[in-house]
Image (cartoon, rainbow, N blue to C red; front, side, top):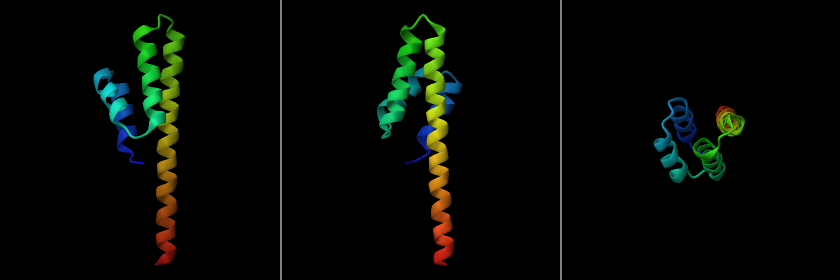
Length: 86
């Protein structure tokens, strides 16, 4: 998976660019990322309880962090394999 989607999601969330985040939700190939964005945007738009919005925001941010770590681990493993192949 390409890390660009996760970087964009983090940037759009940080900058409160909800329109761009919505477009990313539709265009990304990561279904879990898309669902996390959807849940957050829905809570942000319709929920009157700030704790619900906060919960969905932190869930989205945790997933972005997790996915980024997985990409880095995969990249490290691939570079280690290449090093041993010589």
